[in-house]
Image (cartoon, rainbow, N blue to C red; front, side, top):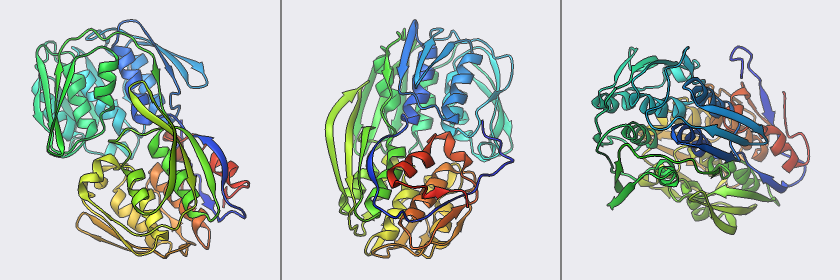
Length: 449
């Protein structure tokens, strides 16, 4: 695990030749978290292949172990989980440390709410700043009790409900984490748990619930959906093949688009429509990205992506696309910095409560590297250079892995190198990022400054 007291600066420079070759990006983080949790709640033994072995997911594996599931690392992304059944988790002997992972912390609140046990959860300095009230408020209606620091922040104590009530909750903001927490709590409740979202968010939880045998009904209403879960199902162990994470694939993809002459094949990328907003936006910008060998694995659409360098043009990104690409705005902003014209990204309010205030951090990243950028309310406006941006800046990552990776991709496409103050947090979602990018570049384009 990363020692937060030892920052690891890293710099990126334009490579001497185009990016080329093929790569397998790490497994999908969202699906990896859920595979471990559902495996722990299922009856029987769940085989997981392609699991993301970044710090965030390893925290979830450790938490499931602490709650009584048998979790075995068989090597090479192959894991096995012997579950306890719905309601069968045991009280942990110690505090659950969720590291940097907001997904793990929020989903775990839902899972714990439906179990008659006491648990305490904490995280690193970044996670301890992030709001948890958005999940603890609705989950309190199950009968679970939560105690947090001021502002609903970690460390957090939960006393789960012995006989949890089903929830009927309308999400005030688009959040797959809140939706998933409510559904996880609903597994232990008698009756039907109902969640209404005005904007559709990633549906990995619904897909995986069905994969493990739960009854889930989804009705589309406008841009949103109504999800109903029948409580107290018997979840039965099922194999999970974790696809490549589209949020991780975004970084080598944008690098290949921006470095002239590049051609890169990214294998086995998950392309769930509720996650693929970035690729839809890049296509509108003129990106040459071809989907090869489309297939379905574990209920999720997957394809290989052939990415070729492209002259990008500015676009206006509508706010309703935000839930499908909420993690990709920093790297989209990098693409916009090299595009021709002015790109406007609308409705980015949710970026303010990520690992950092990602809206401000992204604007700072661009401004430090000679890119004209403004923030108006919840919109970000980027003036594209129509070619390589100036670069040459020092970027403060705010302990945010996506800000770090976005800045380093900018360095590959800029006229002068870009330096980040700490690249250590990249390991939370993309182990081996620098090595993979250097292999595609054919040189150590990313290296310690």
